[in-house]
Length: 491
Image (cartoon, rainbow, N blue to C red):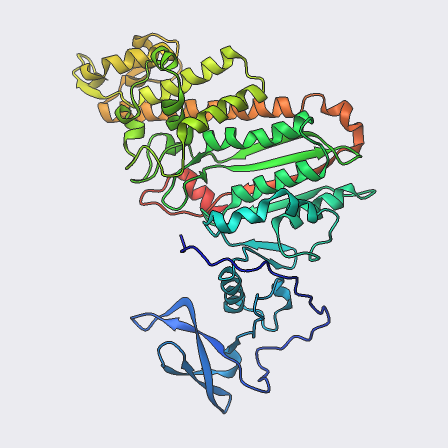
């Protein structure tokens, strides 16, 4: 997290000349500007970092340089020079207008603008957002008065903003014969992808004049606390990191109003239910139910305090500064009402969550078998957890214990194979992950059912126009990486 930045005046729009001539890297300008050279590490190997240097002399196609920071003198072929741009005070808003286009030039402009509290920068129709992790910087960017200034403005007419990306997509579907649009939001973990999607969804709900009375518009916004609770977690880089990918389609009628929506999830990191790195947390919803459920609900769920639950006790801290789990639980319950979950459905949902948490407390002891390899049984110290988990999952303790300690092999006949303690523990965790994955899918299905109700008639058949928003993963590498993380990184 960078230190707080001094507030500057908002950036004025910097007009660009589309006919500006581009200089090749081979051209030597009239007066030598600074250049970028790859920085060497302590072993003398070239790193992915760059440092600034000045040109000392040129001879026979080679250039002698002196780095500004270390004073090191180096010689490079002239064709490898990466010239630095002379940036205006507020930087360049659209980096396609830079004289020199290469990686260090782009990074230098982003750094220059970030130091002046300019979070957004364009590269053509791509909006690059640099997360300030500073609410004093962010808050003025999202007031409704600023939001409305981007309505009916072409991309590039106003300073860079994610609002302009959403407006551009909306204009294109609203035009006669307009085509469907997609917005891809990508970046590393903690970059602000999920927040950017939420900001664009808010923009579309406001400018489409769907208003607070529009049921679907309200439900689209209500998906955020619900899906963040069940799909987000604290990681080492981000207190609210999405642990799944999400594709959201927002459907508009011919008049440009939101009429239905649909979400699809990808690659939920189910392994986080049962294990996570030290200092991180599993999914928010588990901490929320522990902090926010009433005493009556906790007693009915037979739910121990959070610190006594193994799946939660791996965390360095059960609470996170800036996150109020009890308040977030109330927001989740409000979202349940928005999507018209019945009292019985909410009770069942709480029971599944409590069952998963209680499963984690089951430990297994070795058990000698008369006619087979040694098996296992739930340890005496875990009998209370076994009974509690079985009760909320609505099965008998014996059925649950048998399912975890006996593996059925084959079909005709079926052979019951006792499992040792370590394999019973694997089965326990597999059951917890499967339960959570099914619950997550059920929630998505229920959200889609409500957001799409009556959509066909309202959209008038073939008049449906769609804006799709893809919030797609952040690259991360843990000390131990699951198949889900491999697939996320690959994607």
